[in-house]
Image (cartoon, rainbow, N blue to C red; front, side, top):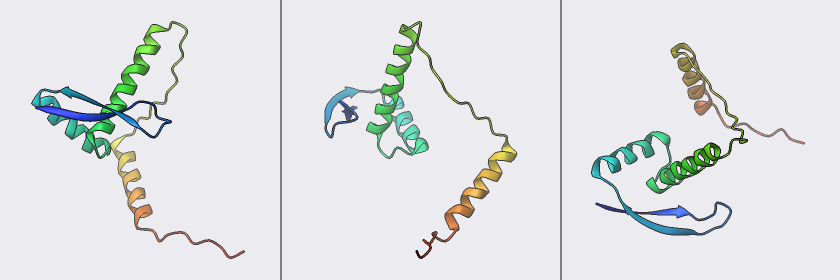
Length: 101
């Protein structure tokens, strides 16, 4: 199976360059599943993110002086349930109104 995707040439510019490559069927299926789970909407966006991550990791591993900073968040099942209930409340809440000046 042949898959065509658009890869961003430069995130700041409005155009993309088309790239075409082949994937094994199982990898394509998994790409579709990851795209849905991550909420990217289209496979090309998922591929762009994966390529950016690969390039970033490569640059960091090449440079002994490089500094990578990140945050690790650990949620327990109890906390996750609370967060989801708060999200539901926020989604169902009426839209905020602006106070009259």
